Length: 518
Image 1 (cartoon, one colour):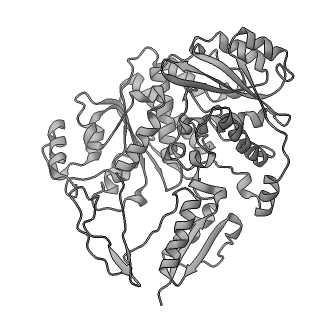
Image 2: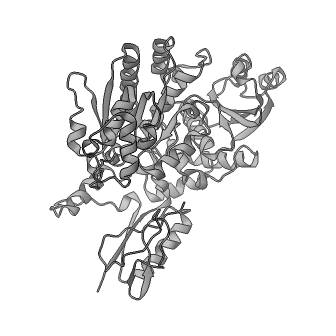
Image 3: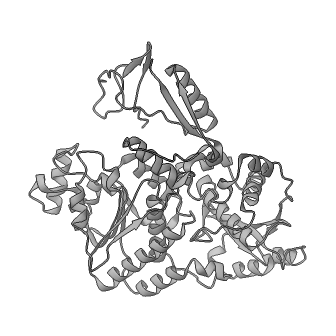
């Protein structure tokens, strides 16, 4: 008798979202249910004209002068709908500040969120949640340069404010300030890879170091290759996207640092200001973001297209990187472990053409890693995980290790697991299990919200997963090894469409694997 296994997570940690909440994910299921049923003070949304009359109205409003609030400015910049999200302890004074800022000239309305429960920690958090959700929603192009707070901060009763935010989002939809539901937003790839994510302490500290390295390379003209190594789920892609937005903002926009209201705002822009100061008189650097995998590259393009400064960043494949004759000043490579060698390349012709463009004659001993090193005039940063190198086509580990320079300290590590709520114990447990090692003290993961089921009937398992897929808006997956007789599929030249209707059969039922939608 064959046994089929299914494991899935409940909605509470849907979409493996970074920083969903370190606090509330530790709560028991009963506490979560009680929290959802808690009577929270209603958030009132006041609408004011973005002018002196609106400021006067705020002056005469209860909580308009001396109360923590979150606000949204919206307007039109040509054909584009634009918005700005902020927080303040004085809505009236903050509006006066914005009215003096030419960047805010397109704004027409100010929506102020009032709530008796608001405090400084809460409004900073809600501001961040609004920025990352509104960016992924796509209704507005945001003027925000960063995410409010660059670093994640925990605080008392954060779980309650997460619940409150769900209600606020529904109110914003009614006001016409959002198009999508919260579930639709949080399940989107744009949300997952948003550059407006709050960073962990580890990510933030590393970003500051990388900004310093980049600034130094641009100032001195010395070439640097930097490796950031981390396992799956440690937030390498989030860090890469956040870093490139910081660089792009500094290099492409005139930044008004007088539009900073408080220490909390200043804290997240100190490195930003320093970098801007040091490279202000240098030529604007050209920037490329390299993603070897097509699907991820397309995701990054969709993330970048609604952010003005990132429109100047070329999101390219390794081959396309070679087509710019003068190269790039700064090159970031995500998933660098998937860079390819010639011998295993899927297209020898395009590989040879790229080599020819760059002057490499020894095709068989050249790799895409060599292309990037040559095309990066000042800085190349590789986000790398040696354990995710699973193909014979990948550049060997030794080639990356050869880049290590102890004198320049160019190899950084990122270790904190942020993808799984069960944490390091869970990862260690499954790593040992898959290596057939003894787990003497297997931890109890039931409190994390995971469900684990064993099926004797594959068809019933498939139906259960399909139901979950409907519930979680297309997030569920079926994963299998080569455990069944496999019928070789005849596919078209692009490998997209199969000319037969199944790959293998289980108990008389036909199944197809690795379907691609393009």
